[in-house]
Structure formats: C-alpha cells, structure tokens
Length: 347
Ligand code: DNO
Image 1 (tube, helix red, strand yellow):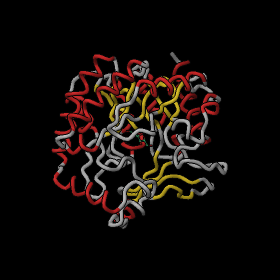
Image 2 (cartoon, helix red, strand yellow):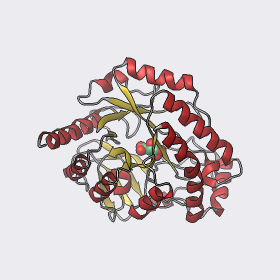
Image 3 (cartoon, protein in one colour):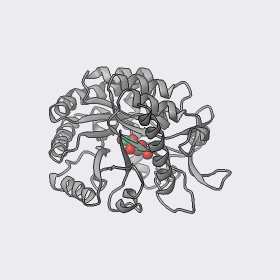
Image 4 (tube, helix red, strand yellow):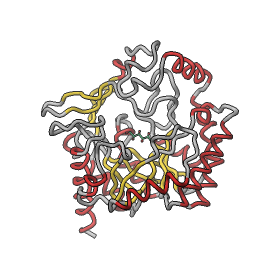
C-alpha cells in the first residue's frame, strides 16, 4: 500500500510540511478544489499541483475527487458535454502521471452528518449522524441548518435541485451511472487510470434522494457494469461500516482478491443505534470495526494502491476543518502503518 494523507490544497490549514513529518506517509490525496464540478481540469493547474507536492517531498498518489456533474447523475441531455469534459480531465491527469481517481455518485450531497462537534467523554469532538435528527432539519430555506453544508445552496437552488431528482428512482440512477461508466471507463483503461467510486455516506437515502452504493450487492453490480480493473472502488470502511449488515473485513477481502479496490479509506465508526453512528479514533478498540482484519485482508491480497487514514476527531485543542485536522489523522496513519509493519514483518 502507499500510505497517503488527504490534503485540501494551498488553503488547507494542514501544511505539506506537516504531512511529510508523519512517519510512513509517502503521498497526499488532493484535488483542484477551486474548480466547479463539470469543468475541465487544465493541464497547467494539474502540473502545478503535482509539482508543489513533489517539491515538498511527497507524491500525489490519488485525486480525490474528480467530481461528477449533477447533470450526469440526473441523466440530463447536457450530460454528454460534461462526460466529454470528464474524459478530457482524465487525459490531462494521466499526462501528469496520476493513475488513481476517486469520484462518487451521490445526488446533491456528498458525505452528510448531523453534528460536526459531538463531544466525547475524553474531551475530544467528532462527527456524528442520527437519522431522526436529520429528519428534523428543515430544507425549505436551503441548506442553512445542515451541518457542513450551510452555504452550499440557497432556498431556490435547493428547491430546483430536489425537484429535478423527484423523477430519479434508484434504478434510474443506476442507469445514469452505467451510461457514465460505459463512456469513461474505456478512456481510463487506455490511459492506465483506475477510477474508484466512493460509497454513499451514510449508506442510505437522505432527504428522499436515491443513494445506491450502499452494500455488497451494489459493489458487485457496480464492478459488473464495466468488467475492467479501471472500474474500481474507493473502499471506505467507515461509510459502509455505518450499516452493521456490511461485513467490512469480508468486503475488503473479497474485492481486493478480485483486484477491484483502487483506493482505500480506512477509519473506524461506532454504531449508536439504527441509522445512528459517531466516528472514533482509528484503533479497533475505539469503534465497531476490526482494523487488523481489514489490513490483513489487504496485505494478504497484495494491495498496492493508495490508502489513507480517514476522518479524525478534534483533539489537543486543534482548530481545523471538521474531520480533517492534523493530529488525530496522523495518529491514525501511524497506527495503520504499525499494523502494516506487523503484517509485513511476518512474511
Ligand atoms: C469524506 C470523503 C468524501 C469523498 C468523496 C469522494 O470525507 O471521504 O467526501 O471525498 O465522496 O468523491
């Protein structure tokens, strides 16, 4: 595996220098965050990002994310133009040596939580989700009251977006995903790029919107749409792990054996009840996932793609982007590196 760390670009309060000082971390996962979904990623900007990372002694091990425009998810007639742009961006990324690209197919909202600062008994804070709290959020005046999304949509924009999805069933969304993959996977394959879909987080419908990348059946259906190693997964243990019926070590074992994991997000989660969870520190003892079993499955199947610790708690009075501070993620990286060293030295 290539141990990596998410970096939000020059605006990130966590510097490349700090990331380089985390033992074992070889690279960062980043994106051109200033561009809107659907825009072509210019060669020059990609090269600038790659050079800046390299000048700091690291590599760009994956792009997270190259976002999919809503018109593609909706199946609107304009989608062909955005798919062509996507293919152009893939070409430009390949020209700069990028080989792993993460994306998701969640309508309107990416990851969603109901609290960004839930206090834990030890004084840390974490991200958490409770479906009944979500149900109480009033979207009639936009996303104002939705944690993490407060400035994303005003009332009119959100209304329009939710109305557009009213006619999109889960099956329609699958059709739209297949339409997209039939066009971009052959391009990625030719370029030597692996696309990895990120599961829906949380893995169930929110606000009546369809969400489809939620469990083992969905992952199988996805990889069969285009039977190519270029059509892979960004397997996120915490997203899928919010559903106790998802056996995470078994999924990691199964899909890494098939060589369909392009990218790994490894974090732990504590289930608080039905459709309710909070995020914990990475070690197995802190949550419900068996992190050793996850790393063991990857090791056994010679996983050599990028892997990153995922969200961290806020600890040691750090102030930063919820889920993406330095300290707890660095502890996560060191822990995952330790598990890996243990596995490797047994070879
Ligand atoms: C959350 C992340 C996601 C992920 C996208 C990938 O912290 O894992 O936002 O980057 O869903 O497209």
